[in-house]
Length: 112
Length: 113
Image (cartoon, rainbow over all chains, first blue to last red; front, side):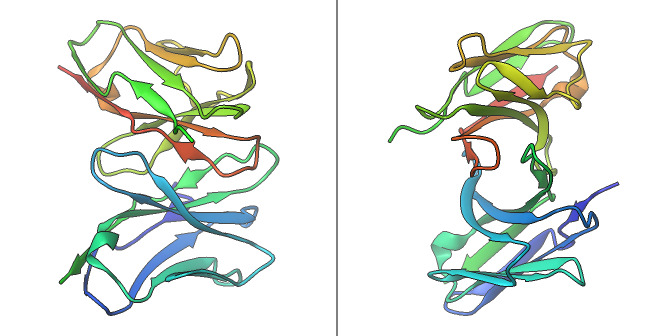
């Protein structure tokens, strides 16, 4: 059973517009959430994170929103740039070992 | 600062053969992870080390997979014998300590024929 779900395998956005990537989780013990970005033939790169005590975290063009009651988080990219085209993975962790549970990823394509 | 290094980048073997992957984490990082990423899936944790001790290997198929981190720095992951379903990208990650941000290497793409 998937504990972290990214239900959109792909997303296409025009350059300059907002990209919104969604993630749902089922385990209420998760208390830390992360987004990783992955280019082809490279490992995932850490992008942004949020603790369960917050509902928003911002870093430049990237903002993550957390809705604990809905067990839902989203990543907003504003404005989107062609270099943002990549696969984005949502990950969650809980407990003392910090193990990450990843979603299947969403492939973002930003068109010029 | 140098990132996580992995080798080889690509490996093709036949089923029932053995294979080994090597990982050198970021300097000073005490925690090291091995993940398996099957095509179309997210990375799945296989084993987690804290220095040279195993923290979690609950998802490691121990009948064929083994991993070690003898001196608390480099690590090797071995598969013996390989099966077709082991075809995947094997990612190594490291973090300063447990609960810190994990940084990933480029991965080793394994194809089992």
